[in-house]
Figure (cartoon, one colour):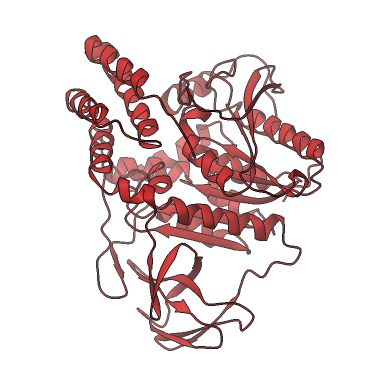
Length: 485
């Protein structure tokens, strides 16, 4: 890791290059809507980016009884669309986990000035880290910053954590490798590598994966590979390869999460980033869960617990123990045993071999060996602790939350259908679904998520059908979030 005393990055004066502007138009989709109308988000402020832009930020205190001098600050890096308020579900998970959150908008997003630009996102992010350090000093916390990145924000967070002093932990969801995305889209329409085709639980139940194929020209190898490398060379974003950033993390703890059913970004990229990072590290591949927003709805309690445990180990505990389970492989079997100093705990064990992955759910008791059959003696094994579970003998099941129960019902089905139709750029079907959803008066956070879909529909319909665009705007205003508690 580069030992950098301050938060500095190369700054290009003047207007971004033509290539930079083209990439911004193709990959960044900012808006200035306030998705949090009616909610108390936190303390609002503006701060300066080194490029001269005024950036909007929010200080959101953690939801816990601990004195603020004992609460680390987590800097939140949002994705490539909307603004910080459209990513509130993740900010709220961090807040409810007990951590103070500093969230901000890149230039051109939300209330930040300037135009959205991939070249200047690094400078904006570094300025936000400086502002978060200032908040730490004001509240008397002397420890390191934590980072949380989503989508393109995950690449930003990894790049900063691997090169800048003062970072104590980084958690990411939706990591990307630019050249692999371009290559995947041009070869078979998938936005990244996908080599695991046979997934199941240890009892044989299949874990299905969804596919979303991008339309367009298909190229055979090696032309697709060359195009991917050319895109990487011309893409003016330092964090474009998350795997290289993860390799440079040194001893900074890393937490990687990804929905196995994500049909936009295959989870193999997350797996690669995890595999190439040094320890300590942890990965959570989430069955039956899709792209961003879905994890915060399907497994919100487990996500909250994972975040709380990870940052506590990385930023609070003086000498954390990351490898608490003894793993002994014997031919095509493995024995797991828990340290006698710990209480019984649930784990997810991933057994990976070639194009196969089996997910085991052992519940380990201290001093008791747990034997598991493997796919192959050469299997790669990945162990992740789990928290919000229901024990059932020597195994466990996920414990459903009130939010996940609602999401698994009619409201969730409607929201998922909306997302699918909007991805396919339909406007008639989503209008009808939103009209029906509005009549059910959905509670938070489902009214909030519906607002995201209203905004997407309005943008899609502006030129095609102004009447539907106006209806979407009306629905947006009627679906006012009421509570995040």
